[in-house]
Structures are given as C-alpha cells and as structure tokens.
Length: 173
Ligand SMILES: [Zn+2]
Image (cartoon, rainbow, N blue to C red; front, side):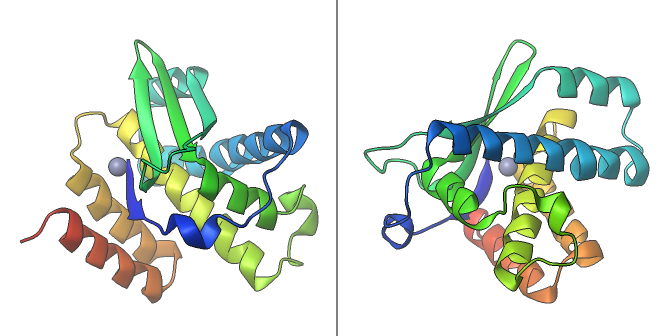
C-alpha cells in the first residue's frame, strides 16, 4: 500500500483515458520500473538478483477501478502465489495519463515542472510497492522509513516533510 490519501473530488473532473492511452500509460509505468526502480535496488541496495528476477517476471500493474469511491489510498498491492499486482487508483492513474507525455524519454530536459513532479512521484510510488515485493517481511513502517531515506537521496525536502507527516498519521506515536 502506498499510504497517501487523496481527495477524490479534486481529481474527479479529469478526462477518462481510452483503452489505448491506458495501455500506453501502463507501458510507461513498466519502463519506469525497469529503467529506474529495479536498477535502484540492484545497484544501490544490493538486492539479490535472483529475487529481483523472480519479482520482475511475475509483476503486473493495473488501473484500479473504484466507481463508488471506497478506496482512499493511491495504490494497493496484491499477491496471488507468485504473481504481484500493483493496483493504481483510477483517479491517480487518470491524473498520470493526463500529465505524463506519451514518451517521457523523448523529452528529456524538456519536461514542464508538472511533468517532472508527476514522473518523480510515479517513480517514488513504484519504488515503495516494489520494496514490499522484494522484502515481503518488511512492515509498512519500515518501507516508509526507507521512502524517507530515498527522498533524502533524490527528492526534495518538501516530499521528505510530507512522508514524515504520513508516517506520523499512519502510526501515531
Ligand atoms: Zn506500503
């Protein structure tokens, strides 16, 4: 689970992407996973390559439909035998579809501020969920701690402050 809540109303007015755009965004998410998140674990965290290979082989990403607005977290993780699925809430997914350019790599250096923020957030979200898969025994709190560390390494102080607030909210005291 990515323990960040959001306001459904704020994102409700976004256009719903068509099937083709959904596939395109899923492909972008896979590219970010393979091109940035997995190398992070392999190079920086020294994660066992055989564990990485197993997770990557059985990893799926889906747009999570929530017509009734029952789900208030950005993403959820499910596991069935070897298969892991990252479910990204439709409001968040549609927001990504709205902001992320079709081919992020082709516009390196040419991103708008909003695109950069969204790409960083997406990578951050995927990194969180993939840490759960690679280290299934780690608690939510432990994964959030490493989010904070990661934020220190690559992201700005604003995000770090936000995560500390999240940790306090999820696990008071
Ligand atoms: Zn989590």
